[in-house]
Amino acid sequence: MALDIRGLLLCGGASRRFGANKLLAAIPGADGPLVARSARHLLEGAGNALAVIAPGAEGVRAALAPLGCDVLESDRTARGMGASLAAGVAATDRADGWIVALGDMPFIAPATIAAVRRALLEGAAIAAPVSANGQRGHPVGFSALLRAELLALDGDIGARDVLARHRSALRPVPTDDAGILVDLDTPEQLAAWGQP
Image 1: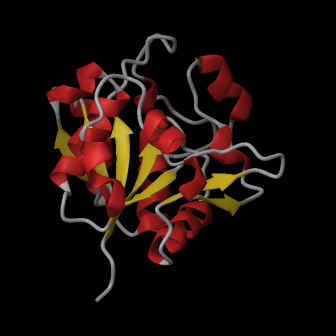
Image 2: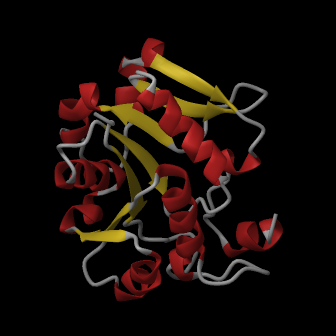
């Protein structure tokens, strides 16, 4: 039986440094808002996507729904990335693994996401893309072996502690995809990237 690997797109951040909801910002030279591109790439690379959004984030929901992206509205997003991730895992708790992507990282190639998925299908407990100079990027894949630890996450640290505890279990996925390291926190960063 094929393993069920779920794509989780975390979209609950407050965008404080951006000055507006960055997920709805336009990418120069591209159609649709930033979050739509992140979702399209996750859908293409993982085969599915569940976006975890803040209550009342109707603009984000409207950008994602036409793409075939499932949406989970959760008040846990107010507590931070770790709480959002736990909410997504809880909503898909029968899955065999998760690929955790961020709504503000629209430049990750679908092929990179697919490579992380393959690593999970091959039995990796954790998988993540790694650049030529050894930097770990996003998205990060987790197998169901770590379900309990992911469900216990809270606050804004995300899965950093889980990664630290299981460093030896991480399967690196080598890539030359520069998008694995690019999250957009300011309008200037978005303008500088434009359309790669």
